[in-house]
Image (cartoon, rainbow, N blue to C red; front, side, top):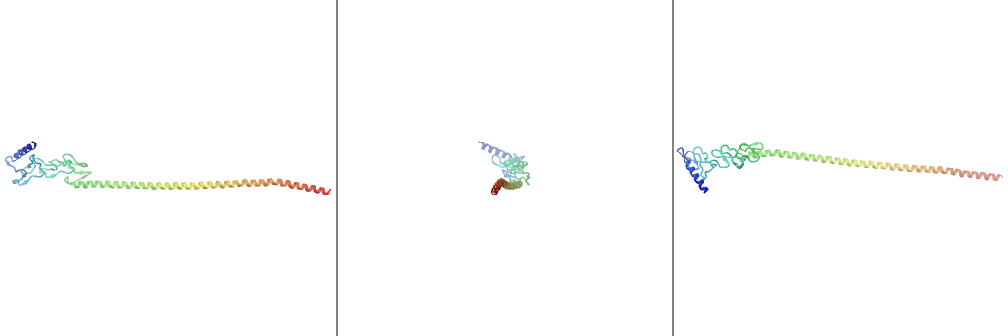
Length: 228
């Protein structure tokens, strides 16, 4: 039933367009002198699927299909328009832009303007140019991190070597000090022995003197006894 209503409405509109100001109109889909030109493929059809355009200018009576704009509906909307819909009169994106695009025609991407709002390849080039500096910065940051890590490893190994060297030197000094103390103890242990030997010698001398004295006295006594 709805389709029938649309067909009736389209038929009535078509009949009304056949005569405007007592001027004969072209058949559906035609315009120009002698109705020799076809209406634009971008013209939106009436509900009965007939396409009508102005006999002299070719302007679409029902407006444009989705994705095109202009009086003749022959100019494509920018592909960055959301849902690919733009205003018929000027081509501005009707519902805004897709992500990362701005402008009336959504022609600007990441600071790069298209040479034409109908050209999409320029926008891709702009994106590539924007990505290149980011990649370069990332590589430089990675190189800087590697350099810092390398210096850290170098200085850590250097400190480790110095620590081991100090420990080795300290061990050698400790060994030398212990050897010196041992030699001093040995020398001091020999000296008392020497003193003891002197004491023994000195202790024997008085005894030896007493024995010699006794012998002399005995000899003197024996001598005196013989004389008598």
